[in-house]
Length: 236
Image (cartoon, rainbow, N blue to C red; front, side, top):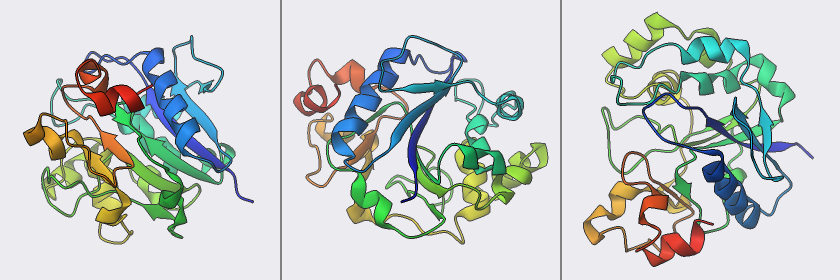
């Protein structure tokens, strides 16, 4: 049986205020909603996590990528460090990795997302930011050791090329530039949403098929939990 790691990255650069307690809640949601054997891993330089979280230091090469600025500006996170998961060295973590943003809510079983037999599976958000062909950065599934070109070819020239091709963001722009035309995406029926999909209802209308809801941008799930029942019930 192949090994699986669910992975997030925690850092503080001033663009977002994430804490170990937010990672602990994410790990708790994954534990409840992913019945297949897995390990929850957080790459971080912080401490103070629950026993459900395996905290690992960021590799030096990923630190170097993290120092590259996103063309979106200082108010947006530079997430290039996450591209290290495409390196050949990342095969030491697990056979497959499921990347998750810290600021998501998981209300249903995640295991159907693992059923797609592909080296990489991306998520196409309902709301386009830049070209509609893009992959979102908040969730993707990778068989480690495959598509090493995503890591090997990355650099300042790649950042410019992805931008010129109409892709927005940092790591998601580069992943989209390299893979969006050749790799599969989960279908809409997979139930991956972002908070913008329910903004019109004041975030109160959770789709019945939702497996993951990403709260990229503002407000965050933990800021809404006090007044939105479904967030309060699931974000714990």
